[in-house]
Amino acid sequence: MAENQAEEHERDDEDYGLDSRVVDQILDAVEAEDTARLNELLEPLHAADIADLLEQVSASERRDLLRLWSGEIDGEILSEIDEAIREEVIEYLPREVLAEAVRELDSDDVVDLIEDLEEPQQEIILSSLEESDRAAVEQSLTYPEYSAGRLMQREVVTAPEHWSVGEAIDYLRSAEELPDQFYHVILIDPRVHPVGYVTLGKLLSSRRDVMLRDLAEDSFRTISVYEEEGDVAYAFNQYHLISAPVVDDDGRLAGVITIDDAMTVLDEEHEEDILRLAGVGEGSLSDRVIETTKQRLPWLGVNLATAIIASIVIAQFEDVIAKIVALAVLMPIVASMGGNAGTQSLTVAVRSIATRDLTGSNVWRVVRREALVGLVNGLIFAVVMGIIGWIWFGLPGIGGVIAAAMVVNLLIAGLAGILIPVALDKIGVDPALASGAFVTTVTDVVGFFAFLGLAAVFLL
Image: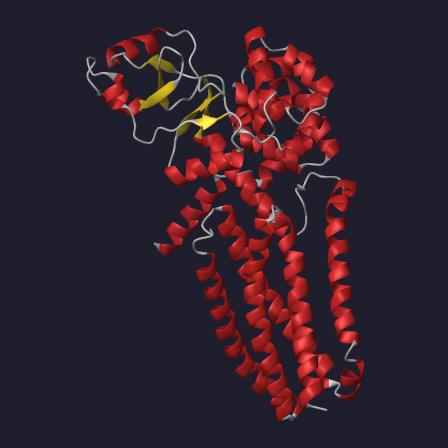
């Protein structure tokens, strides 16, 4: 029975994402220029899976696939494609196909599609839109990058605040165009200021004579068009919002942001933090060699500089190392343990700063906790390494020195891992971007200095 459940679970897992066998069949169809077979294989795939396929194949395979299948590309696929290859894909599409694909999209998806394109390609897409849609997109593009004005969609369902449920339902049934997906009917006053919203569930489950204002949700809040999209995503996550109206400088309704867009921003910020912690910028698997090299080179240079600093510290104790060769064997252990402990604290701190869980009110409590964790871990591994050092080299002094250095370095690593990102955040520097190099430098320098310094004092 357990075996059957495992097999069923394995089959369920294969239902999500691209099956490698299907990818191979698609590439075989492309190589054979078998358009019918290609259409047959791509037809059942979700737009996100087709976008993944285009991202995973090589540039030449992508070009050949689009040459055979470009007529089937729609707006949903374009909006799912990674920005790194989106411009390349658009270049391969016939103009009439691109125009038709863009017309299917909501205004926020069009903005997301074209904001990173070169001006000639932007103009091609804008010229394919109806006049009113083009004006809405161009207005959104005037707002700062990464702002709510760029993130919002203009397609909004509104109703006067004095309407009843029956009036609202009649209006929705008679409307010629409604957004494909919406979660609230936004209530507005005569000056088009949003004053509340009603969920579709409450709207459909209430009597026709009930007033909309009596069904308004307590979670209602507005967002400025100039609000940072990171703050927007935080508000959605923190207050469990499904959608939120966006207002201009005068408080008038300008658009709406929905949870799918907010969660996309949240995912992008999480991904960005992870990549920055590793010093690889904002690269993707589809980037070319030269682009990836340029992104990683600066931080490898920073790491080289920090390694030189650590080497300078070691150079101050050349005589000690020459006399006690065992120190050279044990040095990397102290530095490595400190680096790992610092990375653990650093990761927790950066994540907590990003989610705003680490604030001025609790920072010192967290610092004390990390210091105590570092001290306790340091004492535990001091005992372990002290015994190992003694047995390994037959010198109790070696065991005592590495034990003491372990305590010092793990304590400092815990403090550096929390204090450095907090300090960088205070001065306006992204802690995910710069903390790693500083923490590594501190743990290496302190680890080597403590270990070799104690050895010089007590073993010579």
